[in-house]
Amino acid sequence: MDETPILVEKRAGYRVITLNRPQRLNAFTETMHRVLMAALNDAEADAECRALLLTGAGRGFCTGQDLNDRLSRGEAKPDLSASLDTFYNPLVRKLRALPFPVVAAVNGVAAGAGANIALACDIVLAARSASFVQAFARIGLVPDSGGTWILPRLIGAARARGLALLAEPLPADKAESWGLIWKAIDDDRLMSEAEAMCASFATGPTFGLSQIKRALDASEDNDLSAQLDLERDLQRQAGASPDYMEGVRAFVEKRKPVFTGRKG
Ligand code: T3D
Image (cartoon, rainbow, N blue to C red; front, side):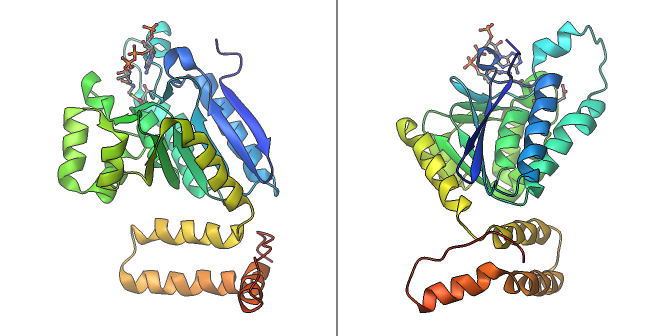
């Protein structure tokens, strides 16, 4: 079952990464973590890759840690902090830091760390049949993979507490109306919309987009004054990029810009 826990497809300017353990609703094993991280590093190192689409095979997106895998190792009292340090935390940091947009196409249930990995992506699209479950409380755990950080920021304290403590599924439409995700989409249109979005990002001003990611991430910790300084610094770099000049010229010449995505 685990021969290819991750599928990678190269498209023009972007990659599609599919979590591929459908019989377990794409729950994570250590092997899958390692293969996924290698795929993300490979995409990052490829100058032609300007966007990433993350989705799941079968009827689920991802249900977090594979609980069978943990039990089958016979670990009576596993140190879960080691699992977070080695796998989940580097994964969330990597997704946030990739220098291009990451789109999650949540094709089905996203539970436990699977939900929070989806929410760590820059744009979250979800099939209407999908749901988000902070399943951790059902097994005596704490939401991880950034869940306790991102939930209150996206949907406020009351809803974050409800989701985390009750561990009830949140349907995609409600996730959209709460502001947890960008958009819920009819199931049969999810992948085409997600691919169209990535194709558009793949011809976008990638360096500028990466600076937007940086600015928004930093705003979570900065006060207004520090953020104004950061915007100034990032704008200096963005304004020195060829894509800025191309964007301005294209506007004035009333044509579509042709962006290189490069910094300089
Ligand atoms: O441990 C560490 O390293 C620390 C890090 C922890 C991070 C975490 O993510 S902890 C949270 C782990 N995840 C969960 O607790 C979710 C477990 N899954 C579920 O609660 C349910 O599967 C769902 C509510 C998500 C979906 O339910 P349903 O009824 O649609 O599907 P199902 O029948 O439960 O699942 C289908 C199959 O996938 C089933 O196998 P079977 O019976 O057909 O052989 C089920 O056991 C398997 N499966 C689903 N999720 C997992 C899983 N097997 C192992 N681990 C899973 N996480």
